[in-house]
Image 1 (tube, rainbow, N blue to C red):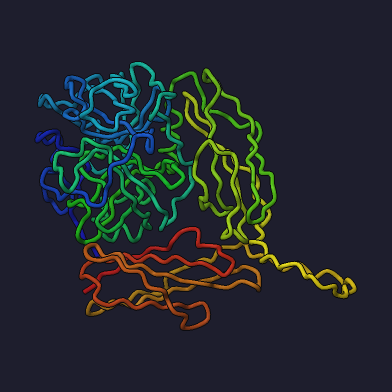
Image 2: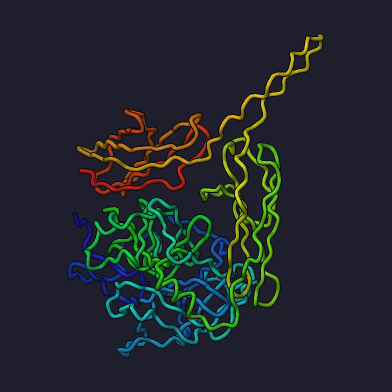
Length: 511
């Protein structure tokens, strides 16, 4: 069933001036200025998103007044953005404006701030969209463009770093937590926010996304969809970054429903950078003489995998063609991709009491003027849980037992449970959700908790602990769910503490 026919590219209103007002879908036309505002965002420092840039008009002194799109740093001389950001005509001469009419602003979280370091504003020399992108269509597959700057950015300055691009063909599974940022329209600021803002959303599967739009608009291979109730990108965010929790760049803001944070629960749509042709375009079209750092030896993890002990990430080695040594950061996580200590200069991690059964990996990220690259250690042995309580010493002599054979080591479960939806049935605002949970860990493990969350497009978010109704089958019941589209997510945990690597996500119509 098609829920939302109208769709809009996410360009901007520049202080009351509509850059592009065309909207596709169902033959309707509407101005981006009239779209409801994005909900759920918060102001963030540029150091949280140092690859984020604003694209602004060269002739306008104020970056805040001149901003109309976002972009992402890929190396010192290049930025990527949405292809539709190239289709602007500010001087109303009937032709798209040339690249030299625009600048890139980096390292400047508040676009109203006084220009100067660490912010950098550099004129664009050339830009070009992918050959497959139809700029006249507004909504089109392959919505990506490469921007070449007239001089290089200082990518070692505070708040200015290249993004780490997702690999070609690397999927973003439904349920993956994502983050989107930009200076676009907000609930309270119809002309956009002078402060950089971001919000957290979830990836959704292609069938769940296509159900909301005219099928002529969607292209599963080149588009990635994401949603969260009341959260969305909006006008002015186009070309900005969509990143995973580990900061890997997976998409660019492209288009979405006519109303941002749509009341019918329709997702936002992003350019999928893992698509091989797009990935090759972004990686292969640069002409700077530098290549990203290359790992010649991976980091190694040393120490005892036991609660209370310290694990150390010993640096690997890197080669780089850019001047100066690359900046190195470290991250500790689980073998299935969960972060337990985010990127920092710290090379050590103290194993926690709740880490029992986990296999810990240390990651290393190297950045220089050319870009960034990752390397990871082999996983540790499964973490041994906290030691038993200390027993006070016995003060009276006791006979010592004759030592017997050492007991066999208990198997350790390090396999995360997997969850799939079986059914979601909603009637009279009451919903029954059933899921299947498979835990293929050792026989000593088993499912500990299954928590299902209802995320209505409007109304309160609620989480229910599901009850087991059959082997591997769990059920949760919700009442008074707001009418309209509701998304449901489920997260599971087993007895050993392993969590499902990605929360499952599914939508349903509540009547």
